Amino acid sequence: METPASGPPRPSGGDANIQSRIPRPAPAPTSQPKPSGAKMPAPTSAPSPAAATPSPEDTRAQQLASARTRWERLAGLAPLSAIFDQLSSVTAKVDGLDNEIAQLRARGYRFGRTMEERAATLKSRWPQQQMTANRLLQEQRNVLQSAANETQRLLGQAERNTGLLDTVDSRLWALENQINEAQRNVRGIFSSTEQEISKLQDEMREVRAMLDALDNASFDLLPDEHGVAVCKAQWISDNQQPEGLLFLTDSRLIFEQREERVIKKKLFSSEKELVQEQLWAAPVGVIAEVQADDKKSGLFGLGRQELLTLSFVERTRELPGDVTLHLKGGATNEAWLALIRQVKSGQIAADRFGAPAPQQVLAAQAEAEAAKPTAELPTRCPACNAKLPPIYKGMKQVECEYCGMVVNI
Image (cartoon, rainbow, N blue to C red; front, side, top):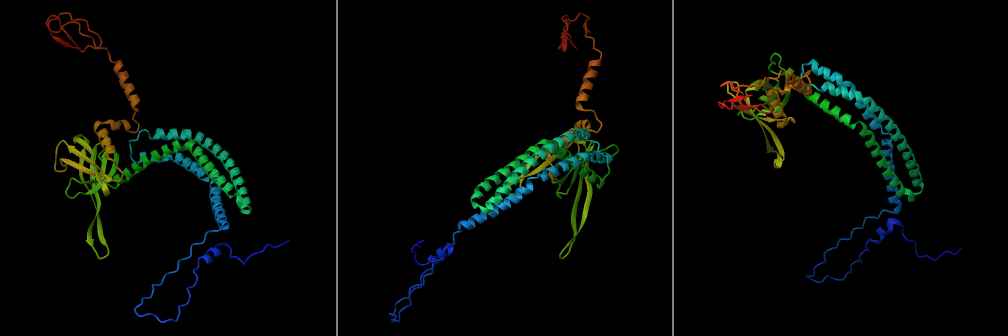
């Protein structure tokens, strides 16, 4: 076999590029004398060598390493263990609802009439949802395990034949989409139940915070008085602008100052004391008007201050003429405006534990109205005793044709 003629050996890979860009050394200067007054030329810097271009082998090695990393991550997600843990968590939450509500009732919370009913509904429908979700979960696990095994087999082939890397990349994307879709399908069975549980638990968390605040308050509730809500607030209508807690009960609105103040400063620290005092309490009956206002605050006015302004029927030494409160801690003035109006109007009684549902109240009222004896319609004028004209349904008054007297029906 003839060997083709070849030139001198040629550098391989990136070294050839680097070597070809190395500047040749400048010729040594001659020993001729330098003319007087002549300026030496400024030295020029040699151009920096360009970065070496990765070889195709290096590129394929990086792609293979990236594919292997993605495979390991997806292989951990394919068994859908996170969904299984989520199902177990929902089961534990459902089982604990009755006990959580019972603890609130034992501590004196008398509102949230529908809590027990909502918990019972969640408990009754959860077993069927759990069984359906578990069945679908197992089916999806089997499908994903088969797809994962096929992808792993293809990845092993790509380690020996890098031409399959593009196919591996497509399979990895398909496997990831399958996993995401399987998670959505299983979660969709019980997501609404999980959301309702979270909403109920959030309400109970707020009730516990209110009961804790009442237990540590500087005042006592009146006989047969029960807490409705509490939030952090600042009384900004006062010169001192104290911060504390705003309490709403089924009888009163109470503001308690509760903040730390520095009493002694030291070099690297300071001594503080807790100032806790009821500043005013207003029976809901003396609240004349409630207004909600949003005031911009913060950088560029992007924030919002939740302001609540109260006006009272009369002013006393303990009760100011009006109060402006800045609600804090996530409380909204719209929600507090609605709560105060419910308490003032007496509608809060419909939310009392053990109270009948509003539909039952309306039905009872309608039944009572229907049971009332029908009032006899007047037939003669009370002034002249003349016979009145015929009275038809919907008439509120009738006029005597003889004396002109108007008779109310």
